[in-house]
Image (cartoon, rainbow, N blue to C red; front, side, top):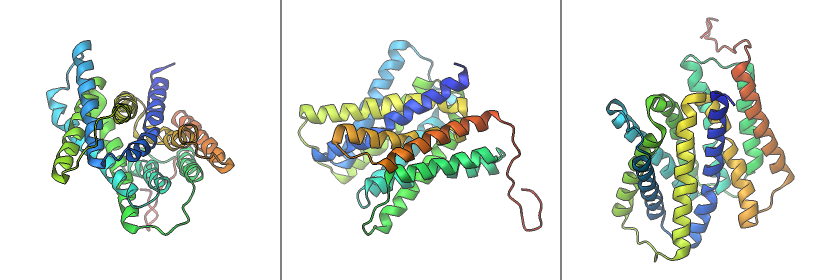
Length: 301
């Protein structure tokens, strides 16, 4: 497996880890853990574990020139998570995830204007990923809160920005140290939120501890580390498409852990998402004519 292949595998593993977030979130809410406290605990534990790994393995630190940028990336990551959880409070989880996963299209369009032109295969991959995600998550029938929809779209826009910026910022940053600093930035945001909100945490029972550890290790340390190592290798556009494995993982885990039903349409949607990833990988290697956006005067843009 070459470097590009390892990058794809790492980003795919990150998507699978992030896909378990909704499962642990549901378990936490069943235990009456407040949102701000939950997210603060998640990232504080993650940061402690990551810095311990950096110290034990004696990994290189984040270069001084990139320190503030990586820390700010952690704040941006916290904004993505915060917007996502605020959307969850007023609209169904499936729709929240669906809105978040409009980010591959956002990333692809922005990259087009940055010079990475949209090819036919890439365009089909994005459309396939979005269509497959719609089938996987389904569409809610109840009336929707527009505020929740706005927060869901904000989370998608912020996540697209995180991928676009992170791909460039993390290119010259050691993966473990960079991930630790990202977790530290996110932890600072959520600790401040919990203090300002005066959240009262529930008693630290074994169940609560297991859920927090699951969020910190399986939904944070592992996925963020894998994503930080894989994104600079394969680029933002490919990372965005591979990342659409996340809702597929969420639905499968919900069926296994929570007993949710996995419908034929969801199975079809999962197959389309996987096909879109394969198509995107072909687009990375193929040399096909680019689709051009034209101005009214007919000049290629």
